[in-house]
Length: 124
Image (cartoon, rainbow, N blue to C red):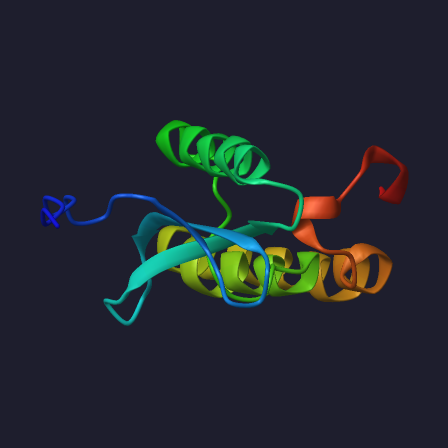
C-alpha cells in the first residue's frame, strides 16, 4: 500500500471517528500559551456536512472573524480593561478619574453583566 504524502502543517483534517461521527479540525491561530488553536466540528449525517462546516470555519479564519479562545468578554471586563490599560496611560489624571467614575457608577451597573459579543442596542 502506498504511503500518503505528508499534509502541510496547519492543514485542516476530516476523519470518521470510532464514535460514529465525522470530525473536522481546523487550525485558526495560536493560543496565548503558544499552542495551535484547533477548532472542532462534527456531524453524524455524512462527510459532506463536516466539509461544509470546515470550509465555513476556514473562511471565517481567513477573514479574521474567528472568536479568540477562552471565555467571552463581558461589558464590565472590557470597560475595566479599557479604563486601566488603554485610557489611564494616555490621558491626564483628572480625565482618568472622570472616566473611572463614569464606568464604575453609570456603565457597569447598567450593562456590565452582558456579554460583549451579544450586546444589542436594546441593552443600552
